[in-house]
Amino acid sequence: MTTTRRGLSLLLVMGLGLVAASCGSDDKEPSGAADGPVTITVGCEPPKSNPKEREAWEADVAAFQKAHPNITVEGKDAFPCINPDTFQAKLAGGTQEDVFYVYYTDVRKIIEKKQAADISQYVGSVKPVNDLRKDVMSVFKDGDQTYGLPRNNYNMGLVYNRKLFTQAGLDPANPPKTWDEVRTAAKKIAALGPGYVGFGEYSAGNTGGWHFAAELYARGGSMVSDDGKTAAFKSDEGKAVLENLKRMRWDDNSMGSKQLLQWEDLMRMMGGGKLGMMVGAPDVVQSVNNDFKGKFDDYGVAAVPESDGKSSLSGGDGYMFNPKASPEKIKAGLLWLEFHELTPGQGQFDYARSKEQGRPVGLPIPDLYGNSAPGNEINSLRKKYATVPVDNFTPYVDAQGNITNKLEPPKAQELYAVLDVAMSAVLTRKDADIDKLLSDAEGKANKILAKNT
Image 1 (cartoon, rainbow, N blue to C red):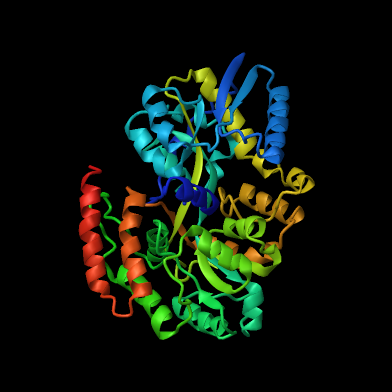
Image 2: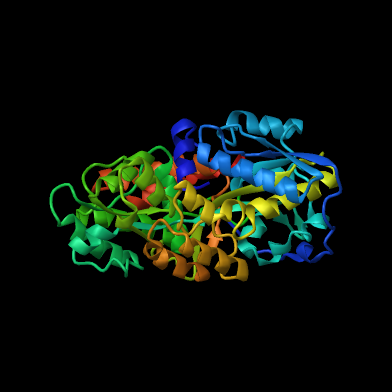
């Protein structure tokens, strides 16, 4: 899930590994346009409380139906799009929409429980599908079978205050690429005066464990074993995450004295102008601007330090199909998804309209295509209609070609809660024993993962 969506879920419920897979099914012969007339229900229509996005959705439905008069699209605007209290019940009862909205982290279980239709024989009709990032498409694949399509994809980065970088004598166009460089920059920012924090970190409300995973992946580590049955974070990489934070907190004094921070805390600090750096996806900048009195011009995003050639914690969402959906509904649904979610200049990528509506344009998400023809076209449109400083995200964008997306682990929220303990310990106790903290967390995590099998 995106960081903004994560913030909502953490506040309300306390709750973005991928292996590149073959796209063999995408090479099947296209099945052609949907036969009609047919009506499809589609989840995650923007609610009326979000009038600009709702207006755009309704305009897109009208345009789509004009181009495909035999298809009727009925949007379902439940908010939030996924209610954890009812989502699983809808799946179990088969009452989800014909084209239903999912987080990446739910896809694998939905496939295993046969709660989504196999769309392999139809997905070849989606023209840009072969250009989608292989690691993104692999979320919705099981071997050669395909069960859905992505709508949003992101991975974590390093969000930093360009204004503070300049004040501290740092180059905002050349943000840190290693954790040693983060330490150096953080010390210079903290030295600006009382109240300045060089690097901020979470350690409560499951957010500490979440960021532990992000920093672990960037170093090349894993949260769980390949089969998902045992913890794998008691490793050199896991130890390095905690040792680095402990040094910044106690040796460098660059993280401030206030700890046990949760999602909203760092966002408020970043918006207040005295926090230099934090781990987060690019949409953090939008949330800081919209909700925490920051200014787009002041912030930049780079890749998570040391993730070059390794992995970055990713998330996202997309759509799957009700297993009861007829072939006609599936073909109609694929036509809608191609139009609304996957075509440059249309639907979610209609940046000219977004600019007219006063919505921010220029954030480097979603990243569905990477360095491909559609991806380059989308990036060109972002720059053309940008309302935010696109160049501030260049370090993040330039790094993506050499970073592999890696999903949250199974039982993510429970594992994050366990690792909150280790994160909070190194940030609040100078004598914290990192080996013992990881051993204790490993034991608890293994019990959690054993329940998953």
